[in-house]
Image (cartoon, rainbow, N blue to C red):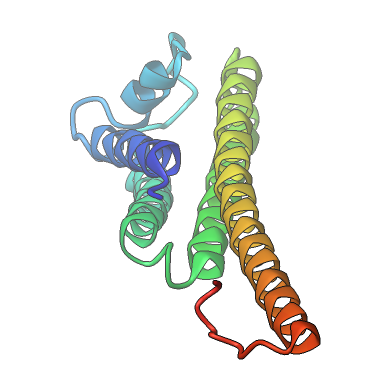
Length: 184
């Protein structure tokens, strides 16, 4: 069974962080525009140097790394989830941890620069990341529970068939008839 929600959410977050990185490296607006996309209006920029390459380059690279991690999680979900679900799970976990770390660094950097309103916006983004991670875990667990239930049904059917065959063989031995082996 394909992990539709997991792959969709991984692709969604990959696109979000890639767009934030792209907006961040834009020469005209830079970090202020990326923060505007998140929901923070940076109005008083005379003391905040958000267009400096020392600020823009590390932030854009961090956002791009998170986008690549989510893209990797998307590919792992589509390609290798049936063969090695633990590998896809570890990539998803690393992507969410990295995204949370980058958002936390944005809060710290924004507080150091005196940007108001950043905490609530990042808190909402972190809550959305957490909700996405919980939804992915729920989907993985439901797929695992379905597989375990199907496996237990197969085992129960095999057990019932084996008991029936043993019972038939025992009855044929007790009655003295030859064991036909085909269930008759």
